Length: 310
Image (spheres, rainbow, N blue to C red):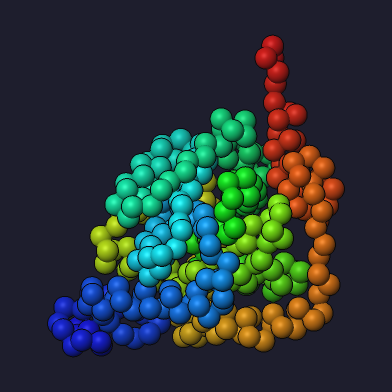
Protein backbone atom coordinates (compact mmCIF):
# COMPACT_ATOMS: atom_id res chain seq x y z
CA UNK A 1 0.00 0.00 0.00
CA UNK A 2 0.99 3.60 -0.49
CA UNK A 3 0.97 6.20 2.26
CA UNK A 4 -2.01 8.52 1.83
CA UNK A 5 0.11 11.47 2.99
CA UNK A 6 3.43 11.21 1.15
CA UNK A 7 2.70 8.52 -1.42
CA UNK A 8 5.62 6.32 -0.42
CA UNK A 9 5.27 2.55 -0.83
CA UNK A 10 5.22 0.08 2.03
CA UNK A 11 2.75 1.95 4.25
CA UNK A 12 2.42 -0.48 7.16
CA UNK A 13 -0.07 1.37 9.40
CA UNK A 14 -3.54 0.84 7.93
CA UNK A 15 -6.32 2.31 10.08
CA UNK A 16 -9.37 0.09 9.67
CA UNK A 17 -11.91 2.79 10.56
CA UNK A 18 -10.33 5.43 8.31
CA UNK A 19 -9.58 3.22 5.29
CA UNK A 20 -6.17 4.86 5.06
CA UNK A 21 -2.59 3.65 5.40
CA UNK A 22 0.50 5.58 6.50
CA UNK A 23 4.24 5.16 6.48
CA UNK A 24 6.06 5.32 9.80
CA UNK A 25 6.96 9.02 9.69
CA UNK A 26 3.55 10.17 8.49
CA UNK A 27 1.75 8.04 11.06
CA UNK A 28 3.78 9.44 13.95
CA UNK A 29 3.08 12.96 12.70
CA UNK A 30 -0.64 12.21 12.33
CA UNK A 31 -0.92 10.75 15.84
CA UNK A 32 0.84 13.66 17.50
CA UNK A 33 -1.20 16.25 15.60
CA UNK A 34 -4.41 14.50 16.66
CA UNK A 35 -3.20 14.28 20.27
CA UNK A 36 -2.32 17.96 20.31
CA UNK A 37 -5.67 18.84 18.75
CA UNK A 38 -7.54 16.81 21.40
CA UNK A 39 -5.66 18.44 24.28
CA UNK A 40 -6.34 21.92 22.92
CA UNK A 41 -9.97 21.26 21.90
CA UNK A 42 -11.00 20.17 25.38
CA UNK A 43 -8.90 22.77 27.18
CA UNK A 44 -6.69 20.21 28.94
CA UNK A 45 -3.60 22.39 28.47
CA UNK A 46 -5.12 25.02 30.76
CA UNK A 47 -4.86 22.73 33.80
CA UNK A 48 -1.74 20.72 32.92
CA UNK A 49 0.84 22.82 34.75
CA UNK A 50 2.34 19.97 36.79
CA UNK A 51 1.03 16.68 35.44
CA UNK A 52 1.26 13.21 36.94
CA UNK A 53 0.96 10.63 34.14
CA UNK A 54 -0.33 7.19 35.13
CA UNK A 55 1.82 4.61 33.32
CA UNK A 56 1.10 0.89 33.60
CA UNK A 57 3.41 -0.28 30.83
CA UNK A 58 0.60 -1.12 28.40
CA UNK A 59 0.37 0.35 24.91
CA UNK A 60 -2.09 3.11 25.88
CA UNK A 61 -0.18 4.57 28.81
CA UNK A 62 3.15 4.31 26.95
CA UNK A 63 1.58 6.06 23.94
CA UNK A 64 0.20 8.73 26.28
CA UNK A 65 3.53 9.45 27.94
CA UNK A 66 5.48 9.49 24.68
CA UNK A 67 2.84 11.55 22.88
CA UNK A 68 2.68 14.22 25.58
CA UNK A 69 6.47 14.39 25.81
CA UNK A 70 6.91 14.74 22.04
CA UNK A 71 3.88 16.91 21.22
CA UNK A 72 4.17 19.18 24.26
CA UNK A 73 7.88 19.40 25.04
CA UNK A 74 7.42 22.19 27.57
CA UNK A 75 4.99 20.27 29.82
CA UNK A 76 6.12 19.42 33.34
CA UNK A 77 5.55 15.65 33.32
CA UNK A 78 6.21 12.97 35.92
CA UNK A 79 5.27 9.32 35.40
CA UNK A 80 3.74 7.22 38.16
CA UNK A 81 3.79 3.43 38.17
CA UNK A 82 1.57 1.68 40.72
CA UNK A 83 2.86 -1.77 41.62
CA UNK A 84 -0.39 -3.71 42.07
CA UNK A 85 1.35 -6.78 43.48
CA UNK A 86 0.29 -9.17 40.70
CA UNK A 87 2.88 -11.98 40.68
CA UNK A 88 5.25 -11.89 37.67
CA UNK A 89 3.07 -9.40 35.78
CA UNK A 90 3.72 -6.37 38.02
CA UNK A 91 7.47 -6.93 38.15
CA UNK A 92 7.71 -7.22 34.37
CA UNK A 93 5.51 -4.16 33.84
CA UNK A 94 7.64 -2.04 36.19
CA UNK A 95 10.80 -2.99 34.30
CA UNK A 96 9.19 -1.90 31.04
CA UNK A 97 8.01 1.41 32.53
CA UNK A 98 11.48 2.15 33.91
CA UNK A 99 13.09 1.60 30.51
CA UNK A 100 10.46 3.69 28.70
CA UNK A 101 10.83 6.60 31.13
CA UNK A 102 14.60 6.46 30.87
CA UNK A 103 14.42 6.56 27.07
CA UNK A 104 11.95 9.47 27.07
CA UNK A 105 13.77 11.37 29.82
CA UNK A 106 10.71 11.52 32.10
CA UNK A 107 11.12 11.23 35.90
CA UNK A 108 9.38 8.21 37.42
CA UNK A 109 7.68 7.61 40.76
CA UNK A 110 6.91 4.03 41.85
CA UNK A 111 4.20 3.29 44.40
CA UNK A 112 4.17 -0.23 45.83
CA UNK A 113 0.63 -1.03 46.90
CA UNK A 114 1.43 -3.86 49.28
CA UNK A 115 4.03 -1.98 51.32
CA UNK A 116 2.11 1.31 51.46
CA UNK A 117 -1.52 0.17 51.65
CA UNK A 118 -0.99 -3.21 53.29
CA UNK A 119 -2.81 -5.13 50.54
CA UNK A 120 -2.29 -6.06 46.89
CA UNK A 121 -4.86 -6.25 44.11
CA UNK A 122 -4.92 -10.10 44.09
CA UNK A 123 -5.75 -9.96 47.82
CA UNK A 124 -8.58 -7.51 47.14
CA UNK A 125 -9.97 -9.41 44.16
CA UNK A 126 -11.53 -12.12 46.32
CA UNK A 127 -14.94 -12.79 47.81
CA UNK A 128 -17.56 -10.44 46.42
CA UNK A 129 -14.95 -8.83 44.15
CA UNK A 130 -13.83 -12.12 42.62
CA UNK A 131 -15.85 -11.63 39.44
CA UNK A 132 -15.06 -7.94 39.03
CA UNK A 133 -11.33 -7.47 39.69
CA UNK A 134 -11.16 -4.54 37.25
CA UNK A 135 -13.73 -2.61 39.31
CA UNK A 136 -11.85 -2.94 42.60
CA UNK A 137 -8.54 -2.25 40.83
CA UNK A 138 -10.00 0.93 39.32
CA UNK A 139 -11.22 2.09 42.72
CA UNK A 140 -7.78 1.58 44.27
CA UNK A 141 -5.88 3.22 41.41
CA UNK A 142 -8.12 6.30 41.34
CA UNK A 143 -7.65 6.75 45.08
CA UNK A 144 -3.87 6.28 44.97
CA UNK A 145 -3.42 8.49 41.90
CA UNK A 146 -5.36 11.35 43.45
CA UNK A 147 -3.68 11.05 46.84
CA UNK A 148 -0.16 11.01 45.40
CA UNK A 149 -0.96 13.92 43.08
CA UNK A 150 -2.36 16.07 45.91
CA UNK A 151 0.40 15.18 48.38
CA UNK A 152 3.15 15.96 45.86
CA UNK A 153 1.76 19.19 44.41
CA UNK A 154 0.59 17.92 41.01
CA UNK A 155 -2.46 19.80 39.79
CA UNK A 156 -3.49 17.23 37.18
CA UNK A 157 -3.53 13.47 36.65
CA UNK A 158 -3.40 12.22 33.05
CA UNK A 159 -4.58 8.69 32.25
CA UNK A 160 -4.44 6.59 29.09
CA UNK A 161 -8.17 5.92 28.74
CA UNK A 162 -8.94 5.95 25.03
CA UNK A 163 -11.99 5.90 22.75
CA UNK A 164 -12.50 2.14 23.00
CA UNK A 165 -12.34 2.25 26.80
CA UNK A 166 -14.85 5.08 26.92
CA UNK A 167 -17.31 3.53 24.48
CA UNK A 168 -17.22 0.21 26.35
CA UNK A 169 -18.12 1.99 29.61
CA UNK A 170 -20.76 4.15 27.91
CA UNK A 171 -22.34 1.05 26.43
CA UNK A 172 -22.77 -0.42 29.92
CA UNK A 173 -23.88 2.83 31.59
CA UNK A 174 -26.54 3.52 28.97
CA UNK A 175 -27.73 -0.10 29.18
CA UNK A 176 -28.20 0.19 32.94
CA UNK A 177 -29.52 3.76 32.91
CA UNK A 178 -26.72 5.06 35.15
CA UNK A 179 -27.01 8.68 34.06
CA UNK A 180 -25.16 10.15 37.05
CA UNK A 181 -22.09 8.08 36.18
CA UNK A 182 -22.46 8.80 32.45
CA UNK A 183 -22.43 12.52 33.26
CA UNK A 184 -18.92 12.12 34.70
CA UNK A 185 -17.58 10.29 31.65
CA UNK A 186 -15.83 13.15 29.88
CA UNK A 187 -12.31 14.10 28.74
CA UNK A 188 -11.73 16.60 31.55
CA UNK A 189 -12.85 16.50 35.18
CA UNK A 190 -11.84 19.53 37.19
CA UNK A 191 -10.65 19.15 40.77
CA UNK A 192 -11.34 21.46 43.68
CA UNK A 193 -7.85 22.85 44.25
CA UNK A 194 -7.66 21.21 47.68
CA UNK A 195 -7.99 17.44 47.99
CA UNK A 196 -9.03 16.56 44.44
CA UNK A 197 -6.69 16.87 41.42
CA UNK A 198 -7.87 17.58 37.89
CA UNK A 199 -8.19 14.54 35.62
CA UNK A 200 -7.58 14.56 31.87
CA UNK A 201 -7.72 11.90 29.15
CA UNK A 202 -5.59 13.09 26.23
CA UNK A 203 -6.22 9.83 24.30
CA UNK A 204 -9.99 10.34 24.55
CA UNK A 205 -10.41 10.26 20.74
CA UNK A 206 -7.76 7.61 19.98
CA UNK A 207 -8.61 3.95 19.37
CA UNK A 208 -6.73 0.90 20.64
CA UNK A 209 -5.44 0.47 17.11
CA UNK A 210 -4.04 4.00 16.91
CA UNK A 211 -2.21 3.69 20.24
CA UNK A 212 -0.69 0.34 19.27
CA UNK A 213 0.52 1.68 15.92
CA UNK A 214 2.11 4.70 17.61
CA UNK A 215 4.23 2.73 20.08
CA UNK A 216 5.20 0.38 17.26
CA UNK A 217 6.18 3.26 14.98
CA UNK A 218 8.38 4.75 17.72
CA UNK A 219 9.72 1.28 18.59
CA UNK A 220 8.72 1.80 22.22
CA UNK A 221 8.70 -1.18 24.52
CA UNK A 222 5.36 -2.03 26.12
CA UNK A 223 3.60 -4.89 27.89
CA UNK A 224 1.70 -6.68 25.14
CA UNK A 225 -0.31 -9.12 27.26
CA UNK A 226 -3.52 -8.73 29.25
CA UNK A 227 -3.38 -8.47 33.01
CA UNK A 228 -3.95 -12.05 34.24
CA UNK A 229 -6.84 -10.89 36.45
CA UNK A 230 -8.73 -9.54 33.41
CA UNK A 231 -9.38 -12.95 31.87
CA UNK A 232 -13.08 -13.68 31.93
CA UNK A 233 -13.91 -10.07 32.79
CA UNK A 234 -17.15 -8.65 31.45
CA UNK A 235 -15.17 -5.61 30.32
CA UNK A 236 -13.38 -7.76 27.73
CA UNK A 237 -16.68 -9.26 26.56
CA UNK A 238 -18.21 -5.80 26.16
CA UNK A 239 -15.23 -4.57 24.15
CA UNK A 240 -15.55 -7.56 21.85
CA UNK A 241 -19.27 -6.90 21.47
CA UNK A 242 -18.65 -3.26 20.57
CA UNK A 243 -16.18 -4.34 17.90
CA UNK A 244 -18.75 -6.77 16.51
CA UNK A 245 -21.25 -3.93 16.25
CA UNK A 246 -18.57 -1.80 14.59
CA UNK A 247 -18.07 -4.52 11.96
CA UNK A 248 -21.80 -4.32 11.13
CA UNK A 249 -22.12 -0.53 11.56
CA UNK A 250 -18.84 1.13 10.49
CA UNK A 251 -18.07 4.21 12.57
CA UNK A 252 -20.28 3.08 15.47
CA UNK A 253 -17.65 3.84 18.15
CA UNK A 254 -16.83 7.33 16.90
CA UNK A 255 -20.51 8.17 16.40
CA UNK A 256 -21.44 7.05 19.91
CA UNK A 257 -18.61 9.01 21.51
CA UNK A 258 -19.39 12.15 19.51
CA UNK A 259 -23.09 11.91 20.37
CA UNK A 260 -22.25 11.51 24.06
CA UNK A 261 -20.01 14.57 24.14
CA UNK A 262 -21.98 16.89 21.88
CA UNK A 263 -25.61 15.90 22.52
CA UNK A 264 -25.97 13.83 25.69
CA UNK A 265 -23.57 15.56 28.09
CA UNK A 266 -25.23 19.01 27.72
CA UNK A 267 -28.60 17.40 28.52
CA UNK A 268 -27.17 15.52 31.48
CA UNK A 269 -25.53 18.68 32.80
CA UNK A 270 -28.94 20.35 32.84
CA UNK A 271 -30.93 17.37 34.15
CA UNK A 272 -28.65 15.56 36.58
CA UNK A 273 -28.03 17.41 39.87
CA UNK A 274 -24.40 18.16 40.63
CA UNK A 275 -23.11 15.69 43.20
CA UNK A 276 -21.57 17.37 46.22
CA UNK A 277 -18.52 15.74 47.76
CA UNK A 278 -17.21 15.82 51.30
CA UNK A 279 -14.06 14.49 52.97
CA UNK A 280 -14.07 10.79 53.74
CA UNK A 281 -14.23 10.25 57.50
CA UNK A 282 -11.46 7.68 57.24
CA UNK A 283 -8.90 9.06 54.74
CA UNK A 284 -10.01 12.64 54.04
CA UNK A 285 -10.27 12.24 50.29
CA UNK A 286 -13.43 13.51 48.56
CA UNK A 287 -16.42 11.19 48.45
CA UNK A 288 -20.19 11.37 48.04
CA UNK A 289 -20.77 9.26 51.16
CA UNK A 290 -19.41 9.27 54.70
CA UNK A 291 -16.70 6.72 53.85
CA UNK A 292 -15.20 6.45 50.35
CA UNK A 293 -15.29 3.27 48.23
CA UNK A 294 -11.57 2.75 48.68
CA UNK A 295 -11.74 2.76 52.46
CA UNK A 296 -14.79 0.49 52.49
CA UNK A 297 -12.94 -1.98 50.29
CA UNK A 298 -9.46 -1.91 51.83
CA UNK A 299 -10.50 -1.45 55.45
CA UNK A 300 -12.98 -4.30 55.14
CA UNK A 301 -10.31 -6.66 53.88
CA UNK A 302 -7.87 -5.66 56.60
CA UNK A 303 -10.53 -6.26 59.23
CA UNK A 304 -11.01 -9.82 57.95
CA UNK A 305 -7.28 -10.54 57.82
CA UNK A 306 -5.92 -12.85 60.57
CA UNK A 307 -3.86 -11.23 63.31
CA UNK A 308 -0.24 -12.01 64.18
CA UNK A 309 -1.26 -15.04 66.16
CA UNK A 310 -3.72 -16.53 63.80
